[in-house]
Every structure is written in structure tokens, then in C-alpha cells.
Length: 125
Length: 125
Image 1 (tube, rainbow over the protein chains, first blue to last red):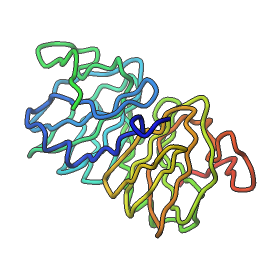
Image 2: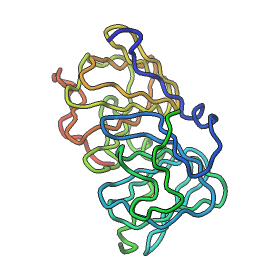
Image 3: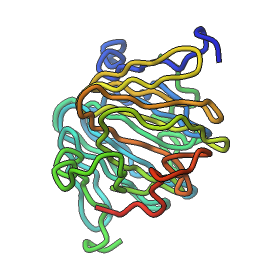
């Protein structure tokens, strides 16, 4: 491995300053066939599930509630959860919340629900 | 999904208070066939590689240097890197550093090097 190809040091807070759009995940890293994505959210997303995969949410800033059909999980800064494959869920944030998502490359934000809030081809930042 | 089976909110800083051993990864979450592990390190680890997988290091506290054969990557708090599969590397921390590792369930800390610092069966915390 030459010096030029050394892995990057990825500063998540710096990356978060590079965009302001809500509900539009940006890719910051790839590990095998998984992406690490940053996303800013506020308000309520659509109910959806990912039948093929678990999904990790790690809160970088703010507070996130993830509604499930039978309850909710509340996450503060520095907290993470694993949404199990197939579990219907709906992220919600009272105020802007900044999140690191970890999920397979092919995972789409709206899962099985589709619709206008689907981001088909997230950009790298 | 019943209330009892809602996913846990995993507080990484709280988990870090639960152990003090160095170089002994503790599992805090599983996403598909990947583990999320916390580890505290200080000093120099062994040179090794993981021929089958990339490996993510995210620094929770402190500073980490990862030596490669042709250079080094330095990570501060809030920075992450992806060590590519097969790349020989050696983590080093001048002072205690706390890290979140993300890698496949079957990944062993010493990779292809083995030896006395191998942790065969990390515990869940």
C-alpha cells in the first residue's frame, strides 16, 4: 500500500458541515458491502421496513425517536440502536437530529415503502 | 414486535465505563453478521491483517495511530477509518484510547498473526 492509498481519516463532524438537506443520506465510507451514511432529519419520516437487513442508527447530535408498531426507542447523542430486519419503523425528530446510518450498499432509505421521499442514489461527500 | 422486544438504546459512553481491560474488545451490538465492539487500547498492538474483511475503527475518546507498512493514519475523537481487507496494520496509542470497532462476527483481533494477544471469544457487555 503506497502512501497515496492510505485509508482516509474521516471526521464525521466535519462531514456534517458539508450539507444541510434533510432526509438525504450522504455516504462517507464503505466497509465491505456496507455504507456509512450521514443524514440530517427533522419531523416524521414514512413507515417502512427493510425485509433483507438490519439497520444501525447512531445519533451524532440531537435526539431521535424511532417508532415501532408496538412502542418507540428514544436515542440521545452517542446512543445507537439496531433496527431488526423486517421491523416496521418510523424515525421522528422534534428538532434537527444528525445521524450516522450503517446498512448494506443496496439499502434504500424508504425500504419497502418507496414513494417520493426515496433517495435512489445517495452521493458521496 | 412486542414492547419487550423493542431494540435497545445502546449508550456507548455508558458501556465504556463497564470495563477497563486493554486490548480486549467487548461486543455491544450485532447488525446482521457484524459485531460492534468497544475496546480500550494503549501502547502498541501486533502487526496483522484480516485477509477476508475490511475493518472500521471509530475513535470515541483519545487518539489512535494505525501504522501501515508505508505510512500511518492518525485518528482523533470522532474520526473513523476503514482498514482495507488484507492490509497489514498495527494500532498504536500513546495514551489510553477508546474505540468502536465494526467487523464481521468471525473476525479475530489479531487477524492472521495469532499469538498470545488473541481474544477468541469476546464477551457481550
